[in-house]
Structure formats: structure tokens, C-alpha cells
Length: 57
Picture 1 (spheres, rainbow, N blue to C red):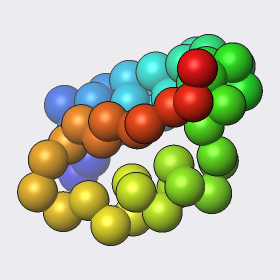
Picture 2 (picture 1 turned 180 degrees about the horizontal axis):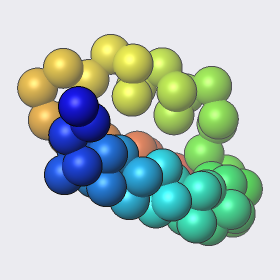
Picture 3 (picture 1 turned 180 degrees about the vertical axis):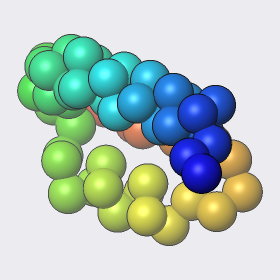
């Protein structure tokens, strides 16, 4: 039996990710944030769900 609540939540998360990915990429480019730095910081983050990145303005 499929847990429909979990399935709906997973589909919602996938849709949100697909919808916001272009905005994230554009923001990283505009703020001159290194994509590799972003990925590294996200991978290393184990305590806080929100990662703040320093950008050069």
C-alpha cells in the first residue's frame, strides 16, 4: 500500500525544486556566488536547514 500523504509531499517537494531552480541559478550568477562553494556548503551543513552564502557585490 502506498502512503499517499508521503507521495503527495514528495511530489510537492520535487515540483517546488523544479520551479525554483532557475531562480536559484540566476541569483547565484547575479550575486557572483560560486556554484561549487554553494554545493560544498550545502553538503557540509548538518545542523541548520538554511545556508547563508557570502557574495561579492
